[in-house]
Image (cartoon, rainbow, N blue to C red):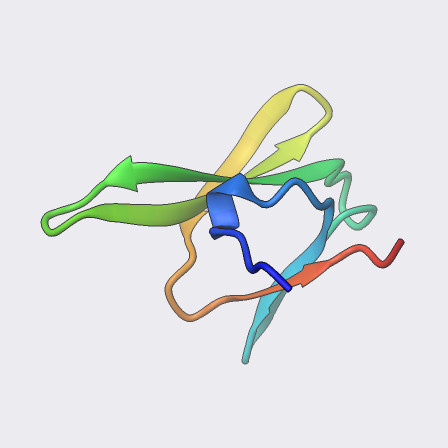
Length: 72
């Protein structure tokens, strides 16, 4: 089984969570969560773009977050 890098994984994301917070598709108007990368001091850093419809509502770096993918 091949494991893809987060930003290259085509699977739909159901939610992001950490100890005290969760972003879930379908809650509070969230329609999608997309992973992308931005340059950091020592290399690329994974970020999540959280959308409400076409509106980019929030961005967060993924250090300390768990990604849960939608089961197919």
